Length: 94
Image (cartoon, rainbow, N blue to C red; front, side, top):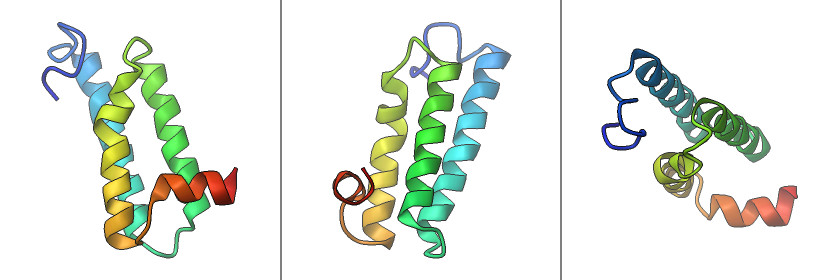
């Protein structure tokens, strides 16, 4: 994750621990996407919670979540479920 955090945070133990926390939770979301027993709504909620946590840990890096995770989740959704994760959200859930 070098280069994604403000200067000095990547070597900071707290910054590293925060990134590891986000990575673990992102892996959980990815697992849910692959497991069809989780509904789309459950996955959208998990993604929203991860986005909120990312902003709590790195408030000055709003771009961090979209840079790292949004495209990953969209790719996984398309690969394992078909279709566009984000387009269906606005039509079905909101």
